[in-house]
Image 1 (cartoon, rainbow, N blue to C red):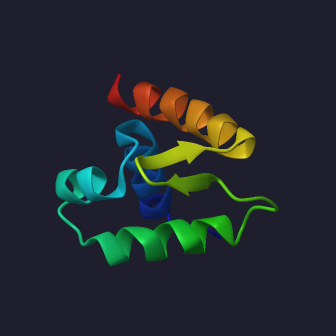
Image 2: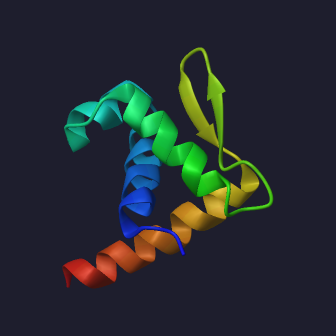
Length: 78
């Protein structure tokens, strides 16, 4: 079972498109972000993010997960 916090970290990184920006928003270190993403990716058959020189981009699986999380987080807000 995956901790809900890992999904929040993934969602924030995906939304920001950058690990350092997400770290600032979540008030956690960049290494903690990377560790959380790695731990989350262990529960999926494919990577969720691809790191680039400009930040991160979502893989196809990452985009699907992001869309589902966006719907879920919006429902929670309401």
